[in-house]
Image (cartoon, rainbow, N blue to C red; front, side, top):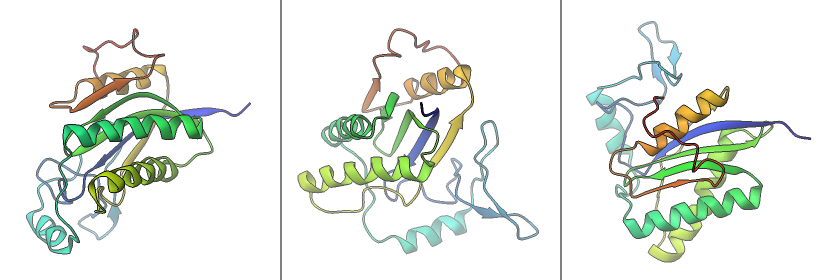
Length: 185
């Protein structure tokens, strides 16, 4: 029997939350001594408010910013569930906002964060391109945090449910009646 892990996955739509953003970001930055730093641990304050980095990121964009519509969000959520079913992964919760995605997903522990995010993005991109024309839908990477225990998983599920202005929020069948929407991450 293969052991499984649960992740909180997050990524943004293309061009909507650039490195240097005042809201915070988890792209690598350099410390005062030049060391590469990635602030993506739970509870850690992310890097933020680097206007020069935002301007550089804007100048490097190779397409228009993407804000998902309700119709597009429906396609995204449906395809996430299809991808998980096909890969035999389990989505515990998902939220699709106009400018970013959150997924809580369980998969074999041998699967990497990059594989999870890559597969969800790739299959969904195909569906969106077929319906709306080819474009760059997502940022290049994303953030994936392995959740250590049931308490962390429940906090992540609750966090996904509490997103402001979601287009779509969905819970896997095993979590629907157990979710405490007032819980804290």
